Image (cartoon, rainbow, N blue to C red; front, side, top):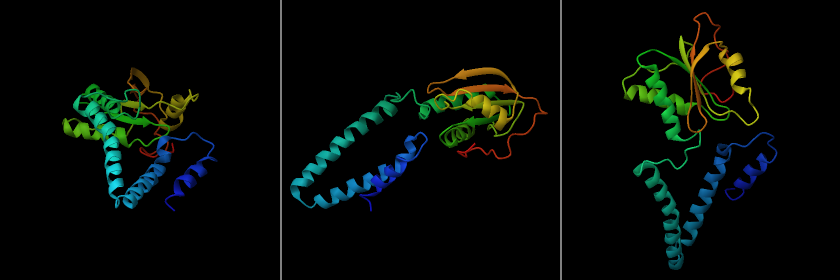
Length: 207
């Protein structure tokens, strides 16, 4: 079952008509890890293969240790152009909180292929850590739209989302773009605007 699972999972996606996001294939990684662990368990009882296994593990650890050293000890980001980069998303959340100051503000997150837990958590965690007001997922006079990169050739994605989901004609008073292509728009919204789409709920992938 474990040996066939990666083939079955990938085989099913052959018929999937839409783009494959990397996290769709995470189950394959898990099954491959099981296969590797089981293989090591089988051969580890032989002295010669014990040495080979230890050498193999050492070679696996070298790039991991280099990455940890590069990112956390030297303080550099190995992936600076990804919208999924922790540091890029941290910069966005820091900027929003600093720009909001002591004001109560709202925010919404547009993300075409991933959940919005990353930004939701960072805004909550940083505001608690720094004793600031936590932005709320509501339309307020000052509202921030945090826009992750849209899909290729879907150039009208942001406008459609704002018009049909957030339902706002708020005036954009400030725009800032961050590494990874994350765009933040600061809006001034009239208090009499219609509510957002009732089917919309932050964190859900389908919007």
